[in-house]
Amino acid sequence: MLSSSHCPHTGVVNFFARAEPLFVVGSVIKASEPGLYHWRYYLGPQGVVGTAPDLRTAEDQLLSSHRAYLRAPEQCGDERRIARARLRI
Image (tube, rainbow, N blue to C red):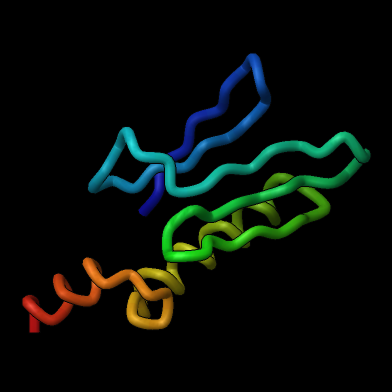
């Protein structure tokens, strides 16, 4: 589950994981073109970026990236998450 915080000065919506409430895992920002939002997901070795026609779709795409990361950390190359997952087995 992610929580979000909107900055009234920059317009950026930052997303935080419950486990690390001060560490930003993704963000959404309105682009200069009308009706376009850019989103970024920061976890994993390369991160994921995309665009969406509205804020809700951008948030949904970011959340989908987070769910994919949580399901398969080995595909994302995050060795720490892989090690933790093996300890739970």
